[in-house]
Length: 138
Image 1 (cartoon, rainbow, N blue to C red):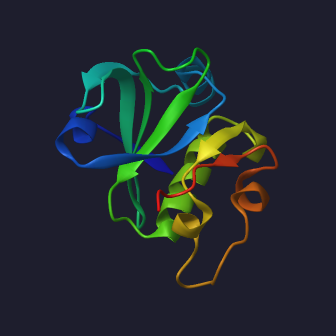
Image 2 (tube, helix red, strand yellow; image 1 turned 45 degrees about the vertical axis):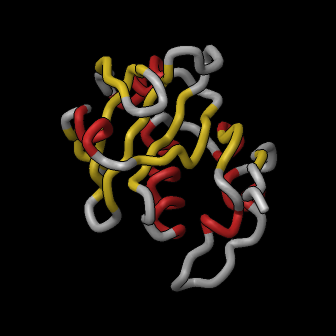
Image 3 (tube, rainbow, N blue to C red; image 1 turned 180 degrees about the horizontal axis):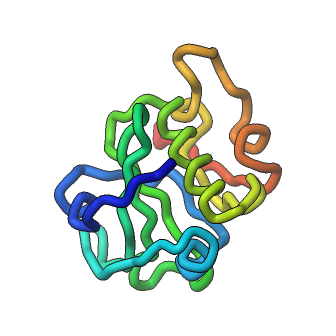
């Protein structure tokens, strides 16, 4: 279960975006009862909330100023292992009562692989058939 943290946890940590969801923050307010607060990071101002998943790590759910309407971004600490990133994305999806097709974009597949269980295959198989991935710059 996701435990709420102060929103400044997003601002104080080096967080990276790992997924964009086709769901506004309002969905999470309705389904999970979450409250979102104004904040900002090096990228832009946002409305967001931060959480901790025991044994996995912290996660932020934000909507940046200028981000497409009806979407939200999942942020996790940089250098978090891929299997933990995947677990945090899945926890956010579950809290919003969303299935994997709600993932509009995610980090490259190789960054979501589980070190313990081996490669997970294409992100589309793990996080939904419509998922798009960004290739790492060569």
